[in-house]
Image (cartoon, rainbow, N blue to C red; front, side, top):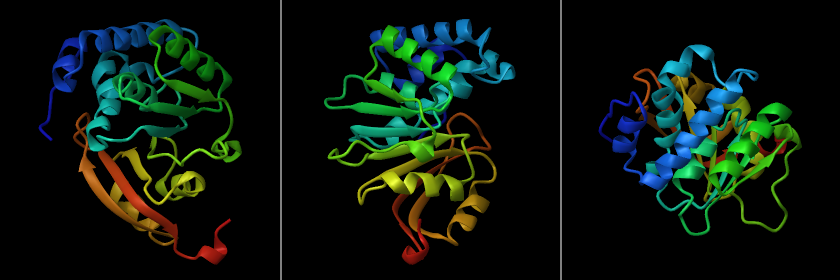
Amino acid sequence: MTQHLVVDAESFAAAAHVSRETMERLKTYEALLRKWQASINLVAPSTLPDLWNRHFWDSAQLVHLVPDATRWLDLGSGAGFPGLVVAILLADRPGFSMRLVESDQRKSIFLREVIRATGAPVSVHTVRIEEFSWPEGEPLPDIISARALAGLPKLLGWASSFWGKATIGLFLKGQGASAELTESAKDWIFESEAIASQSDPSGTVLKLWGLRHANPGLER
């Protein structure tokens, strides 16, 4: 995909090709984040001047990688990146739903406030990932995503509980992505693609599928 220079809301809109209504929802999200940031450390203060690239565009780049996904699970959502941005962008996709798992109570309250203000098709689960259970009887997620949550070996251990045969993992990673893949291959079998980040020249989106434990008898 062609690299885009995103510096503000206008350049984000041009790069992401989103409607005016969707941009209004994202601007509402931005305003709430800046307001709540004064009392809750939602993002690193040093990233605020580059909010549209560092957080919004970084999250939005996942959308084009999975054109048909409708059931999405985002682990360790924090301030909503990438899950809440994705949900706002895909709010008009028929049948789309996003589940955010975030253990921090204050961040969960913030997420619910953004959801209320934007009408995004999202549910928030305020639990530790280890304690989260996928709703019984529902098809497993099409997509599992995470950003800046944990190393890939630990991340796959968490995600494996919700990973179906058709599930795809999208994990936003930094310079250590290759080493994390190598380490993960000791315990897990999977197919993978490393995709250059659209927001960070040193970043990578790891796309994984076909996940299964290398030693099923040792899997917890």
